[in-house]
Amino acid sequence: MKILVTGGLGFIGSNFIRHMSEEAGAFEIVVIDALTYGSNESNLKELEYEFVKGDICDYELMSKHVKNTDAIVNFAAETHVDRSISSPYSFIESNVIGTYTILEAMRNVNSDVKLVHVSTDEVYGDIEEGSFKDDDGLKPSSPYSASKASADMFVLAYVRTYGLNAAITRCTNNYGNYQSPEKLIPKTIIRAKLDMKVPIYGTGKNVRDWIYVRDHCDAIRLVLDGGEKGEIYNIASGAERDNLAVVNEISEIMGKTDLIAFVEDRPGHDIRYSLDASKIERLGFQPKYSFKEGLKETVDWYLENEWWWKPLADEKILHPTPWKLEW
Ligand SMILES: NC(=O)c1ccc[n+]([C@@H]2O[C@H](COP(=O)([O-])OP(=O)(O)OC[C@H]3O[C@@H](n4cnc5c(N)ncnc54)[C@H](O)[C@@H]3O)[C@@H](O)[C@H]2O)c1
Image 1 (tube, rainbow, N blue to C red):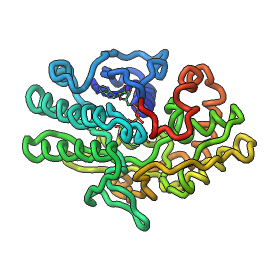
Image 2: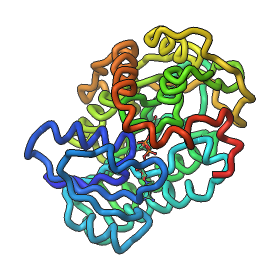
Image 3: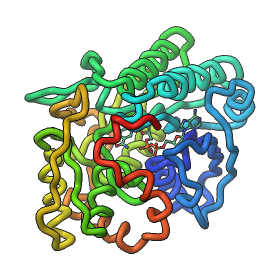
Image 4: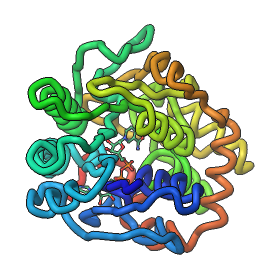
């Protein structure tokens, strides 16, 4: 089976490829990635795959590759909420136009191909109590989540109008190996190792449901195999924590104290995300890692792989309020 993985050099895409590569010989993988700031070629060091440097907004390129594949998993996106606040336009390009371009290529050159479009829980907006179901309405808060919500709408419209075979996954916050040092968990581990304070937005009471990236990859694999056309699959582990609790759990694993420094809150900062993941559970999904286990593996990986994060660290972890930066 040939799989086209867009955004395969980013955090989740590269973990997904590692996951698929564990089944030796079963898959031929082609990666298209524009090598933007979220990517890192060393994420897939030592693995065998075909790499195409390119932009998913490039129709000719996408048509050529969509024509010759059995399935597409679309991870390619601009992903950092803070960056979407300082410069939203690239989010519209990669996340909306990019997804539209993939759909157009499918419609015109290979309407049998299956697309798994990787989206996010952030499209629903925040919820103070209860959990969003897969068919709840969308209420995005940031330019990032608005661009992802828009892309989801195009996917569903192309299924309905042109009969394309596409399913959408919406997952909660991921953590694990190869995640950019600008995200909360890697940033905390790295700053703790360097005996630096960890900047926490506002009161630190914003709640996220944290899923270990390997569990997310398992769920995407289930949707690739058995997900139905036009369906949306929420993916969650149920490990809800506020940011303070996350930083405190990392401090405990690393034997550090007094790490937190509160900083001015991010504009539009969502209070709590929570998903009802019963549909993906009916496809057979069960997270294998508790938050404690996944976090311990993640801390160990960052401590053992300084070669990976060190070149990225100066630019990405040392500024306490990144949404104010002009990137
Ligand atoms: N990280 C999370 O917690 C999380 C949670 C739920 C959903 N998601 C979704 O999962 C997907 C992957 O997220 P991630 O955290 O791995 O992001 P990432 O930023 O680490 O990786 C994104 C990758 O996409 C590539 N890319 C960006 N624009 C492109 C373009 N126009 N053409 C080709 N490649 C392009 C980048 O170079 C990068 O390699 C995204 O769609 C994101 O919305 C992420």
